[in-house]
Amino acid sequence: MKRMTLAGVTAALYSLGAQMALAATAVPGGLEAQSVAAAEASGGMPQLDFANPLMLAQIVWLLIIFGVFYYVLSSIALPRVASVLEERRNRIEGDLEAARAAKSEADAAMEAHRAATARARAESQAAIAEATQSAQAEAAARGAELNARLNQQIEAAEARINTARDTAMGALREVATDTANALVTRLTGLKNEPAVAAAVQRELAAQGRA
Amino acid sequence: MAAEGKTIDALSQFELHTALGPIGAAVNFTQSNAHMLAASVIIVLIMTLGMAPRAVVPGRFQALAETFYEFVENLVAGQVGHEGKRYFPFVFALFMFVLFGNVLGLFPYAFTYTSHIAVTFGLAFLVFAVTTLVALALHGKKFFGYFFPEGAPLWLAPIIVPVEVVSYLSRPISLSVRLFANMVAGHVLLKVFATFVVLLGGLGAVGPLVAVLPLGVNVLLIGFELLVAFLQAYVFAILTSIYLHDAVHLH
Image (cartoon, rainbow over all chains, first blue to last red; front, side, top):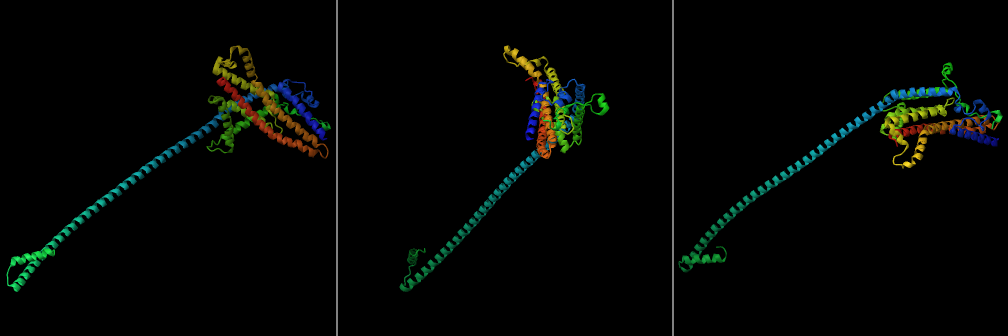
């Protein structure tokens, strides 16, 4: 049975091949390999039976149907599709355009913001520098003033000290001279004031107190 | 081959009958034409009802219609170029007509009008006529320069010109026979294996078990035929576009 099946397939394919060969060369008739019953029923391939009046009718109706079909498609159906696609394209283009505009706007805002930040930073730095400078200048001025006053006071104090010392030294010499005179007079009975004064002066100078 | 006296009758499926009752019979309207009409109506309905929502974001049905449209549009634009826009409806009509003829024919009881050489040759001749007329309208007498490429040595003309003319005239034949033979081969194979299912199924107890084999073959064949149906429509459309490209640009 299996062999029978294979034989059947082979025969069928063979007859098919023969038909194909005939179809390709478009030569009607002569279907030896065709099964007899089929050949009797249709007289070969029905597609090649050009004597059949239905064949011509088929072509006439084909031209009519295809013509109307083409007309309906080209004048009604396809323009609609085209308009929808065009609409969508425009819409997308418009949206893209809007997005592009928004982006450039955002970029400009960002740029302005950056510039403002930079300016603010520069301004604040300048202000800080100025404040620092002025504070430094003020401090320096105040320091100088203070120094000057202190120097003045020191000078005044030194002057006072000098005066006081001089006065004290003057008083000391007088006291020493008087004492020396009194001692000399008492001891010797002589009275030589200039010599005593000179001796006192010499003695004070020797002690570094003149 | 013919077990139990039955035969494999793979060709009667291509016979023409009149359709639509007595009215159809009166005007020789065949079942082939009825299928053409059905295919045309289905295509027009898909393209019009599908696009009816006119949605910016298409639904499935609209996406189907748009996919058909853009597929053929890209095909024409790619082959013919910018000037091809004028011929787009023609190529679209041909592609859809052939595609739906092929696919519709795969349904049970349906007739495949693209399996008739007369129909495919009719369409191919239409393409031939349109491309030739377009070429003549655009280029006038220069169109005949197509048969002799510029720069070829003149003494070769007796060889080149007949070859070019024959190849040009054979275009509708190759275009029509390719589609016709593909569809016939597919349907004959389907019918042959379907008959095997019936014949083997009648062979006693083991018959139904063995009959599963040709049934499986037919399942695979249907898938293959769907591919062929699309592919042949595509080939028909792309060859039409190539011919139109030649007509518009002359080489």
